[in-house]
Image (cartoon, rainbow, N blue to C red; front, top):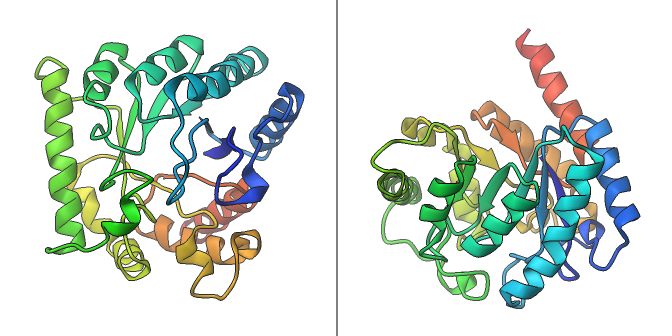
Length: 264
């Protein structure tokens, strides 16, 4: 899943499209698809720790024209709308998005789960405590991190099932939320124990690309964290991750190809 950030303040400067032209957006998307991206994840709200909050109208102003342009230019591409707001999600799907990628897992907007149920599109449910503005102060857990995530996911899946008329949804991805309200030590412990999350029966989406858990232990910054990202992608894939959310599609595809060759 290739990342297309329509924000001016995402943590990795190389991913920021911000006020870029439609042509620049389409060129980056085309390069990602040509390199083998299975999906494009388009976001208009920066979820980095401490990011500025923006109004729903501004998020829509950034996001909706981009999704419409991508859908028109790449009619067969799988497009993910990265938003935690139900109203934005509904408009994004109307504009052409195929999936709602919700960093709040239904906790940041009470209407998100009913909206996803009504829309009938695939949904990625991520673990988060607080919100992007407060999550850095919410990294202490009284119980085991994996048990915490299992309980959170079970509760949110049950709430989604209830919103869906009591019927389970077969098209839900789970994202452990690396870097969201978690210390570096917790992030790495969670990555090592990724297989335990398969108990829930949902495919796992993992977002590690160029995050602090990659570059801080190496004394680097996000701009020089590609090699470390690849190393942790291997760990995630060996732990059963089904989808990687990445800035660097060619390198991720090469990692997948080599692991597949090793298995074969």
